[in-house]
Image 1 (cartoon, rainbow, N blue to C red):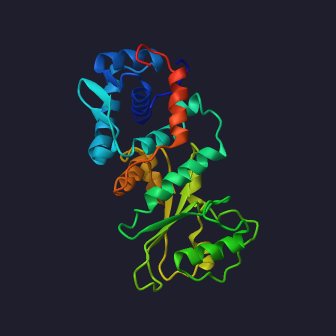
Image 2 (image 1 turned 90 degrees about the horizontal axis):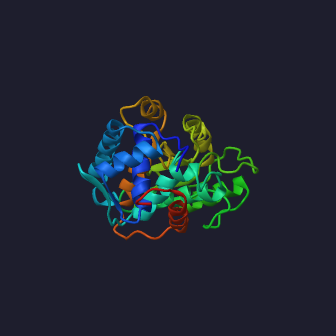
Length: 291
């Protein structure tokens, strides 16, 4: 594959992961990987080494949830309960190989998939007994279309009263795609709640202001202030300026944190049709001796 724009260390790590996922053999030796990186994305062996170090850090955080084994001499695909989720998030990442080739057009299906994965992950955000609910419309949960009615519906699902603030009926979701909370057994008010904005857009900082906590405090009768989350399918280097800029205004839930949350669920992974289809499409597009 030519004309791929892959330059940052995180992006090269994603490219390696994609290449391994779609390969027939499921592994690349280091020499083979260096050669492929030079031909496909113009990356030097030094940059490949840095990317492999990044993958090793991902593996150290995620453990068995990470679908790759990282060695000094090779990178291998391995079985993981959440391999399907990881592949979906990898492919949804702005600038990924999938987004540059077989999924070049941003679609509603892609946004809905991120919300679906986020809902699964954020159900574990507050630990055992936690819940999460997608607030987007159309809704598989039966959310009313009109925003004013949707807030009343959401309050009932969470276990709150609706607030007295004016709720514009034509508003879509108030910036909130998924709500996560942890109700206590006594069912009294005053429990932790998080409001999440999920985005597959490349520009993420502008999305940090989509959720206005002041307005939501008037729409839901909450005794405790909610958390504001920004959920993205990509990864952000924690030592870099992007992470510092985002983390000062919102709690970032990136791919690594999503997989961390998913791994807390004792249930096994499930197939995600979109990621399976994307893998097949990538196999027919990417070239190379192992692809």
